[in-house]
Amino acid sequence: MCRPLYIWLFKQKEHRLQKLYNELCDMEPGYITNQFADIDIHPMDFWTGETDPSLIQFFAPDTDTIFKIANTPLDPEDPLDDPFTRARDSKYQVFVRQEMHHSLHMAFSKYLRKSPGGSKSPDLWSLVSMRDGESLFNSNDRHGFTIENGAKSADGMTSHQLVVMKSQSCYHEILPSVGELLVLVRWMLSGIKNQKRQFSRYHRHERPQLEFPTMIMSFLPNARVRVLHGYFDGGQLKVAYTQALNFDAEDYTEKMDVLLQWAWPLAEGHTSKPIPLPTIEDDEEDEWDEWEKWELRYREDREEEWSDTDDGGDSTGADQDLSDCESEVDEEDEIDVETKGPIEEWSDQPVMSTDIRIKIIKRLDEKLKSLGKLGELRELT
Image 1 (cartoon, rainbow, N blue to C red):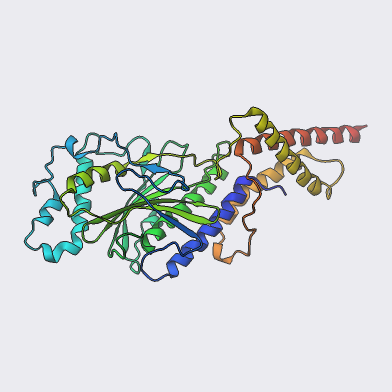
Image 2: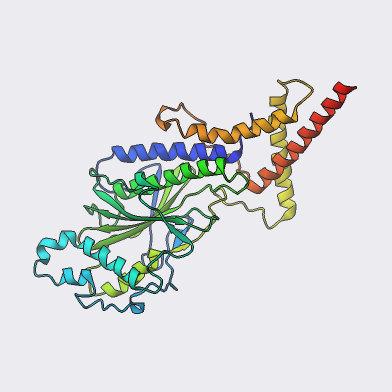
């Protein structure tokens, strides 16, 4: 049976991510370095979002956002307006400093609500309710984090995700924690499973999402905040992260304004295309050559499969094979990934773009149907 390419990609990515998630769960609480083969982390500038050029930048701060302190009636220096300022001025600050990230999160949320249009999410984003994604909001006592809010792209064309979390410990001022990466991978896995289910049941004619980039805003003890985002590529979790910035400083107002730019960031990049992105779109002749190459590969695979069947050929059977391939997604959701046997590793072969794959399948279906009609005419004669 010829399996659609997107199902194969989903299986590979889901298996690798689930394996990585299990490994992170088994780790002791702490921070992550680049010594792990399946994790590739790079520093990111909090003010600009710039990071290593080897990473695809799926998120960037919205410097033109209307969510800023100047657009609110609040005074960041007034303890009555700003919960964080109130906590900083408290005479019990020595005892509450470890908990000041709660006040910082309250101030951040208040500036969002008081900004124009801040009472609801922007049109391009949709909030994830705890009822719809209960497992996504589960806390983890061992690694000490809780999930406050979550959102997903609402345009139907991309699959970016946002998460706001709090942690009980800041294990490293520079490097991200195991708990932060746990949340990152958990939301990616959820995105893959939801996409498989929805595409196979309701949206078969739409282009499937193949990447689920996720951004996290992590509030840490001692009034610190880290922003990180990542995606999964070629068996590796690619992560860009900022250091844990200290907001208990003289430039608190400037940092809060930049943090508000990250609240609803610019969603960039193509999530419906395999990584690396295809480079044949601008050259029609190259696209035709690519199309012919993949058609030949598909033709060889199908000839091997059809050689074991009757010579008459049946177009109905071919259509059923394609339908069975798509329905496999539903069956896999009921099977625990841990119980699956070994699956095929990532190969170095080139990845076919979705548009070309659709053209190939349509062309082959037409040829198979014509063969089926010829077989019926032979039987009549």
